[in-house]
Length: 268
Image (cartoon, rainbow, N blue to C red; front, side):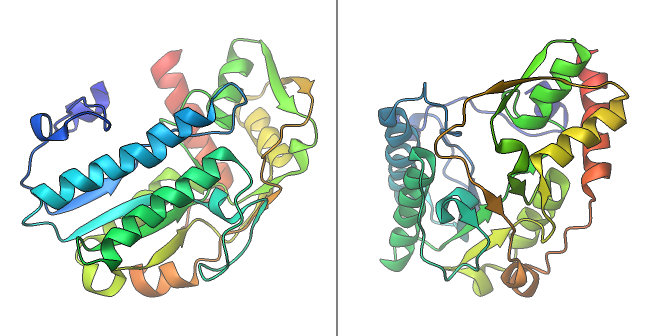
């Protein structure tokens, strides 16, 4: 949060399930809706996913519809988990989510696009693929792995997940897509757009790269397989290239190197 404030961004702390009229301004051009209950942890109850992904999204939509005379576009941030165990498809493919996270993010996406179809707002949805890099959440793969290596503690790995492949997408490339949205609302209203990379790496390959960058081997502790995990993701980004001019260029090695350096600067 300190880094966000230092960059000149006004930070407002609010719960999206509360009365937003007393917290948020009503003079805005764009809404980027990132807030969500993430992950597929078995300790997170279904009711939490419903409350934080579905109910919170609808509450935000209700507020936006009442408070947005200047709104040009509402951008919903969705996920490749909507596709299901294998996210290797274009946006026209039917959704088949297998986790509470994927199911409720699909519901949130449809709430936003439903508001668009009914004429209440102009909206689109961007489905992100395995975003990593500086400021990645502490419970996600690479930050957790980097922390465990530097602190010389064991890193938990779910059996079989080392062979799962991912379109690991560098956060800087994702920011490029977000920036490209602005000013293109006439072309992307009502659209669903994949934002990721066309290259996929296994989790095992990612772990090996981190070990090489830091110069220390990870201490892997295997755990039983986790239900709801995606087996393969490869982003089909033809639509993003066409509509947004999107062109991810950061290699996994360069992105992970930047993430390791960020961690060293902030936490060591």
